[in-house]
Image 1 (cartoon, rainbow, N blue to C red):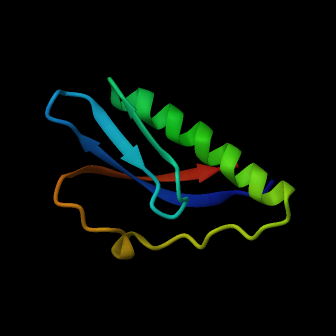
Image 2: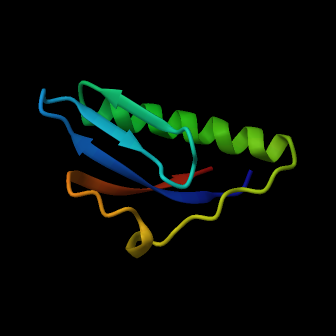
Length: 84
């Protein structure tokens, strides 16, 4: 599988936990007690999603540039995931 790059958005919740999602991979989201929990879940789910798309012959979703990401007022962090 070749590398695919997608941005993840991470928010810090009022209770101190974190929520994250990858806007260009529908259905890929995670929540956790720590940022690390969210990163690990997002990365694993994104990798599995991309693997399934490739295995079924479907095209990979086009990744948006950072300037085209949703402008969430609560966005705590934006991360670029390189998924291989």
